[in-house]
Amino acid sequence: MYEKIKAAGGFEAYAGTLPNLADAFQSDKCLRCIDEGTKDGLHAAGSGIAYIKTKGFDKGLKGYQAIDAGLTAAADAFKNANLDGIYSHEECGAAKLIYDKFPDSFKEQLEKEHKIKNSDEFGAYFANRLATKIGTEYKGMIKIADMARPSGHHVARFTYIDSTGTFNPSVEGLPKGFVISRRYLEGEEMIFEADVSISIVLGSHGFGDRITAQQPHALIVIGNDGLSKEALIGELVPLVAKYNGRVIVDGCTAPFNK
Ligand SMILES: [Zn+2]
Image (cartoon, rainbow, N blue to C red; front, side, top):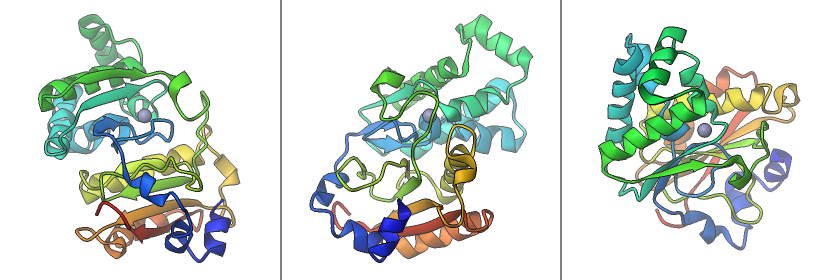
């Protein structure tokens, strides 16, 4: 897929040829996962759950302390986003990534105290608590049947890093992709979440070995006046360098809703 964009002269030139591009800069104000199956709105891995790692585990916190640190950071990131609600979703890779890091003893505690038996229920618990903390509504778990990807398999070969907070790649001609709302996530968090999306694509639920330097996964930045395309690409260059050409970075300046 990226070959087509490359042939057009890069993402900016390619996007300029799409007649309905303006429609890609309209989204609702609900927070969802970065998963390519959860369309519309704003996006953070597991609706903010990845903060349990970056602001919890990585700081030496465990159990509820790590969860609370994640909730505080996620609430801080999205408190000024005027959210209309928060969703969790089925088969959430980010919720699984976090849940699997807890020791069995804490998982048993979560089951006893909150009836949480698996990672998706943990994702719902986090989204629900985050909604309460921000003062918005928990809108429920998006079922796999209502998602824009098949069960058990990720189909995206793109990760969009959006500085507008309105980007929604569900218009004709724009490839499906993970979306990370860089408008609300600081650089360090965005880089971790971009890396999560890459590890999903390169893993067994994604395209695995079929992602090569000839057929790379593309990170596409959507810059604007406040956070330029060049600055966003600069943030991602060190991450991309880890993948020996299997991941590239490209992007555009938002032509709408800056
Ligand atoms: Zn997810």
